[in-house]
Image (cartoon, helix red, strand yellow):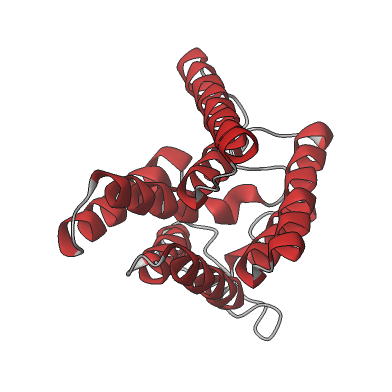
Length: 214
């Protein structure tokens, strides 16, 4: 299934969370970002990714996302080093938007950059004692080198993602993040199950693809 479809589903999940949980603009932005990224994150694996050819509009959008994440990172750094104030929401937003910029990109350099980001997250998690961030970093560093629609497209990966979401929820003290993250990730697997190739939900215990269409 195309990345645009996964993204649309993720945005819909984020919108539902925004309507269900107590509303603030900050909370809404976090729900939308987490849901959208979770709905796409399974496709950080392999070299197939969401599409092999990007349109000019897609390239522009990806570049805007990357520049936006750079701006968020700069604001976070300014707040941290100048005012000694750490804003977790800014850090999470910067990381997620930066990774979104690479979801539709391919190649060795792309994989190395994503793994480098994962390594940075692991370091930050160790330094600040955030177990969820260590887990997130390990996931990000590992998955680019996996075969497409392999381990990231399994129930086990969804459970791991949900555990990471639970840790982020505790860090931000924002109810519903774990549910939104898990729902977003599972939406990707469910949507791919509707494709002819299907999904190996229980790999490696059960190696056949499960699909709901011929």
